Image 1 (cartoon, one colour):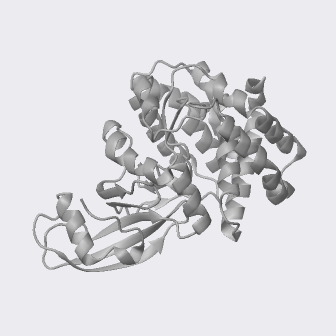
Image 2 (image 1 turned 90 degrees about the vertical axis):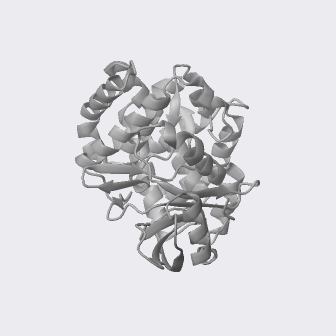
Length: 354
């Protein structure tokens, strides 16, 4: 087992040689040079692309991506405390092989006992590129993403064993959602102070209603559940020609089969396009689930889509409040909460808070 190299400088040619040998991707030879550049806009962790030079031609990866703890100390501390790094490492070890959803090949994947230091070495999927929350996604990209979400949902639908895994979060597993409710009560006033200037009074009122009824939201749904990505947005999807590969599994959880689809539609698609496309796309999503053996009709999917649109409020508010303010991230969080809250208003999601 390779040691945990938790900063870019610790990933040396010698370390890479051992990692690739242990994973079976470098049967002979060694890495003699490795150059890196930081990439991506993730807040919970850092990403670096390595360009490798070998002492011969072995058909080994010419480039690869390393996922590492966040250099932002606030984000790093929060991620460790929430188990985000542990969750992702465990997902790739134990659950990624069980789904047809497209995920990257893994070359090394380790986390320490405290869950504060980790390294995941993975396939470089360039020229595939992540989306951007600052612009609304296209219909083509949205369909590709939702097709992958349906594959994940179908793979674990009704599997009650996933709820027992310590790296799969469930909002109401141990305490009825009390901890999440307390965090939302603490974070919501700060969040409105920071982003309220960009929100309508109707959206703020719905957000306040959600915060007050958070415990009801996380305990109300008693239907069959599945594994969810939890932060299924376009910046966690690498889009290529006719492909979408899903990364960043730090918030893997258990919820409705429509949670990831509702979150993507709410946070990654501009409001006018979401209004225009959503019934058509949720109909297609129901068809993809049915083809994979999940018996959920359109109306059931639509009702769960309406309800779990509120997942976007939870993730966006907590994500912003536990991340240092910065120009780009503040623009991203504002765009996301505007979309998520308007989605909930449009869909009358608060009906499910009664």
